[in-house]
Image (cartoon, rainbow, N blue to C red; front, side):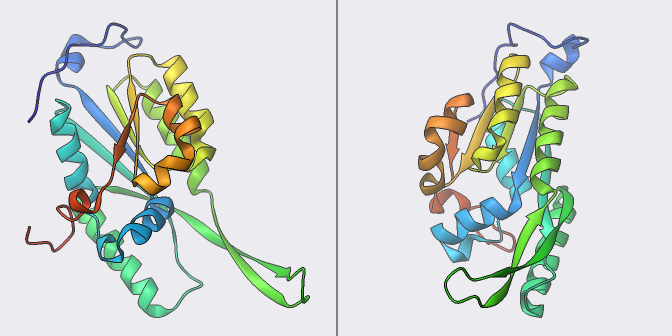
Length: 212
C-alpha cells in the first residue's frame, strides 16, 4: 500500500518545495546483468516489464513519478532468433516509456592458454560507463528523491558511494535476485540504503504479454 514519506531533512541546492511534495524516482537498469540474474532464476521471466515493476515499487514508497533508463548493447554476434528477440523486447520497453541507451559489443581475438586454439571473445562496452554517468547526473540534478539500480555489478560501487556521500537527500537501493545480491552484500548493497529482492513470484506479475 502506498504511503507518504516525510520530506528529507537535507535538500539539494535549488530544490523547490513543490518538488519535495511531488517526489520522483530514477531507475537505472544494467540490462545484461539483470538478464543473467533473471535467466538463472527462471528462463520464463526474461520479458520483464520494467516500467510496470518500477511504478509498483515507487507506489509502495510514496513516489509519484518514475523515469526508467535501460542500458544494454545491441547483439550482433549471435543468431537471428536472438537478435529478433532482443529487437522485440527493446521495442516493448520503449513503448512502455523506458529510455533505452545502447552501447556495443566488441569482438577480440584470443588464444586458448591450453590448446592455443584461436577464438573470439565478445564484450559489452560503454554501457557500464553510461549507466554510472547517468546515475551520478541524476543524483546531482536535484530532481529525484530515490534511485533504484537494477544490477549486482560491484563495478558500480564508486558511483553508489558518491551518491550516498554527496547527495544525502537521495535514497538509493540495489535491485536484483537473491542469488546475485548475496555476493555483493558486503560492498554494493552496504554502500546503499538497502536492497529490493526480485523473486520469481514478484517478477512473474510484471511480464510483457502476461495476463496476471
